[in-house]
Length: 313
Image 1 (cartoon, helix red, strand yellow):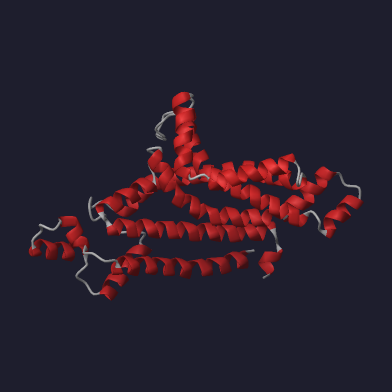
Image 2 (tube, rainbow, N blue to C red):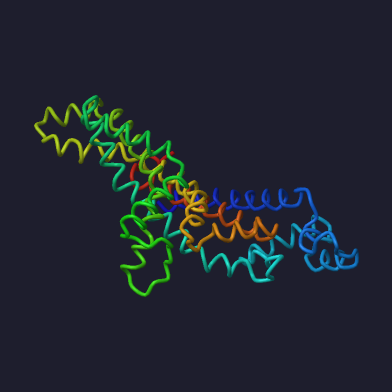
């Protein structure tokens, strides 16, 4: 197991380095002058030169790149071009809110999507199957911003069960959970629909297998056959979907956080876009890349735990 983990870590490190390098060079080839964006068209040439020197933009590209990598090794993402605050500190302050929202959406999707997919596969071409497929289609077709507005209107205004503004810094655990439900459900609906479809397809592929028929011939109950043999082997595609969707959900969390006025990386991204804070955007993109790499690494490790044959390859 240690060898398997070491091999995956050795693959993750160059992936992170490559991701950070691509983000750095993409930020440098974007059109426009960051100094001019900050100071405006009325700025004097002296002020522009002084600001470029302060930001290090007057240095050769290779020097900037080496300094960038050195700072990254110290977990230093630089300072915001607008506020001057350390980006690492700003990211660490709001990252837990985005992680919390994404984990809630993942849990919501898995807890409801897997049973729905299994039930649909066991009742193929019957009413539960039709309902599951129809619900999945609706979930995949519904844009998150539209769903968020609908949930706000119904469950925060007409039926005031949850707060309109998702303020997670409440004093009580109940208030914190209440602030998380509507944005979490909004973010998790698409994932729920995808998990239900994936679970159904995986179960339909596993159920006709020879070892399932053998288990039934041995006299095992249908419950034991499904949960002890079929579900375990149908779990790998669900692990894959969950790992892939974690990064997608973190990206979609931007819209959800804005609609529900919730703190998180989304607020930082929108603020950086509006003010053309390239350094902040560069830092946030690197954070997203690193999170995706770490989640994929965790997915590979879970693969190894669920199916020991993976560790042999």
